Image: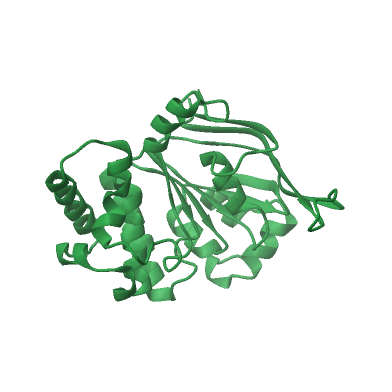
Length: 264
């Protein structure tokens, strides 16, 4: 059984509403009848240009955005019909790493407060125990314990993203949506973060939905690739199959635009 199962997931956003609450003049199908499966321990890379719906898909799976239609199951549990208590339990197993390491961390909170916040919400541990766990998480993502007392503005973009990753790991989740986690970073720092994610997947036995517009990054990290175009899932398959024998014209276009994939 897949760890994550998505069936006919759809999200429609109204557009053109007036400031006075008038009816929408149109709609955008941000995610349009998408079905996919993610198996435990794998990385499904979702690739597509900006506006293709890939980030909305990730948020729908986590129920950070409510869908218009469709179904999501996590380890056999219906995510979209889960009540508050059940959803709270699911949140422990389903986390997100955000795209923007500058905007996703509260500048008024210390790193310790940021990392232990999920523990305060979900677990009743003494402060000393939470601090020890936060220090362990920072070491796991390549930061020193001295970072605990510092604030986000004192760190580089790559370091901030490491803090965000530590926060996502705090509850020992099984599934993480990584929403373009390296797109705001320069190439060398981004490569370090991608390598860190691969290492953490092995250490923490994680399953990833890795969202990116970069086919080379997805090729490096993903077990399988799903290609989105204008809200639709147009192609999916094993990574090397997609790279070597793309079937959809949009996939071929993406590969042709990134010569480092080796596709011509």
